[in-house]
Length: 181
Length: 280
Figure 1 (cartoon, helix red, strand yellow):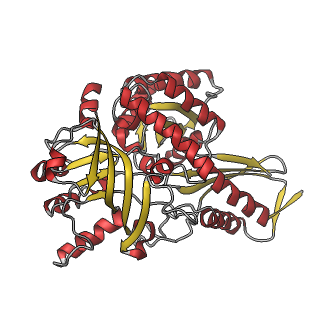
Figure 2: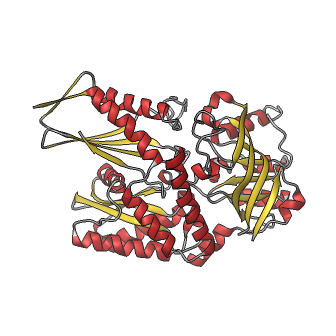
Figure 3: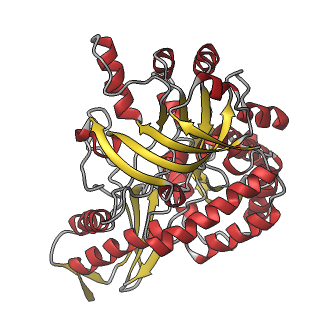
């Protein structure tokens, strides 16, 4: 089913999304991948605040290629989400609304998704040129020294994703893999 | 003896890095077209159409096909009658990568040390494989490799008694474990035989071969076809969300090996299987 949603996302909106839904996101989302997650975890360990309020916000696991002149961003497709698994439950418990990535998640992440009524979306891996066209603006808001791994605030319009783990804990990858067995 | 200037190598590698990251080779485009026709799942077909559109945008607007523009893997076949002048070969190659990734707006994804992890900011160094061959030319292959699929690649040190069935199981195990993480539909490069490192290198090299032309060795060709069929029967599908197209091709290379061993390496590449070849 095709749905349109706004970001940030509320718990009620997340509850309305189900595995296999094709969703177009419009609004503000944030990027973070390996190194930014490590820094956020270190900040939390020191009792510091994160560079942005997680409440309802969508984190996109993505490190773009550099923007050519006149463009907001370069190629901008998802990276493998499982590398962020060890940091994710803590961020979900702090109110993160949803995640966009690709590939499987751990049992602990799934539990945290259900506990917090969140949702995990997959964007199409390797569609970085197409996805860059749905990004209207990009601004580095933290960890600039990390280059492509810095945290960016993105404005997106009709950004295409698929619900892979929903707020009830259903997992589309797992269903496909069970069919293999 | 023929003299080739180091800066000619630099210039070619610069151009090849940019070309590889924006345009797939004709054979890759062809298997893509076939995949769109073959796929029967609705979501799978939608994903393949997005990927086709993605290729079009990449070439027209010069936006890299994938944001992971890879670590630059470079194969050089250097004729033994070639003399390189005007600087070191390694420096010339890395300078080509540096210029290509900087001038081509490609992502710098290389860190200087695997533990300290400081970005080198120019995507150097390349991973360079050199072979000395007959002749007075240099064949350059530039194959930027993304790590979503690289991370799902495997080596199996099988034993002779495992035989060809063991090889088939190893390939299927690697593909199943890779699943959605390796950005299917994938290309599967396989090395069988040699030593630990030789089979890994063959698996990598297999990815740079034309994906529409099978192995010239009859039993290897038959194995490639059988494994492509078996992998697609898994149903992993585009994006790992189910469907008939899990792999676009299986390329296998073999080499003599030891009486006690049967090494198998499976190097998985996503659908953005980039390789550009030139002879200078």
